[in-house]
Image (cartoon, rainbow over all chains, first blue to last red; front, side, top):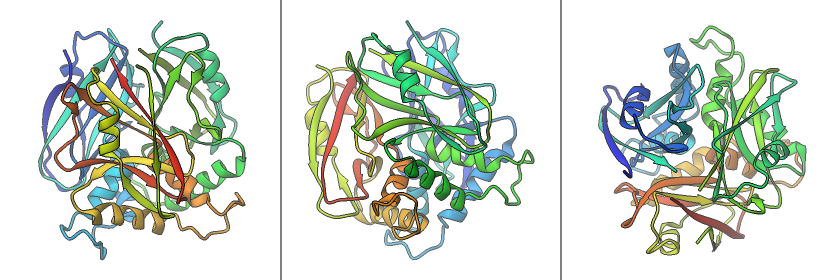
Length: 130
Length: 130
Length: 130
């Protein structure tokens, strides 16, 4: 069936948006051995981390911001260099082993779209590998 | 054959545990084109880096600790926010091209479980893609 | 066809070298669903980020250097610990959904070899998964 595209609308400049439900739904009933999630943008990222306590992703966002502040004399003149840098730190793809019962996420794991320059409409490409 | 699970026991709070041997053994004799290694936890990570000199992974752990200190007024109240943040920085999966002779790791490369909140028993999922 | 190896010569110690063209050429005409790009070295990395404005990758390199300075009393005595650490932060593999029309990179995305300890001759392994 190839790659499925889903759309996620973020609502803040910086936001860890849990997309586990949308991703799981997009691949429901599929067979294969690996789930690949990808974002074709350069100012957001993807990560897998704890979804139970929202403070966890908030701590992650704030730590990234202390390390890569928004305001700094960057060379790129669009005011979002911090977002590009954070995108490289998290990466723009995540992979999870997959079976008929779905992605093999751990008990506490969720898949997050890490928005660093929103709010925006973001594309997510979901692929199941054989 | 699908995904194989292996167990790794770490022995310190912060430890770069070389798991190359365990992973290679788990996929011995398999055929396919890509090795996928995954950890379903949110306070450890996986990375590929130099295995010859243990000082390399020690420098990595110490640099992560300077950037993301253990003690900080984090919002998540379990005392391990630094571990969650470091897990997002390293990621919880690594992939290596694979052939009949095994993973195509470079001369100096090894696969490491990056324990940020041990000691614990950790699960590792190993998958070979076609 | 398995994994294809390409060679990239970097020209500076620290350099974000756009390898999108070389990678795309290596897999031209291939069929499959995922592109996997890998570097078997431990002092460089791979990332996907904006290729339109070279200031973006320059800002990334400089931010990594502020976080992980070259000069520091590291334990590894080869003078390139910062390169190993940055390699773990970016990772040594990237993946992109793939179709007959090529890798599904976003409008602004390019694939970069992140050289942290050049200039050197670097190997890149390119694999297409089914």
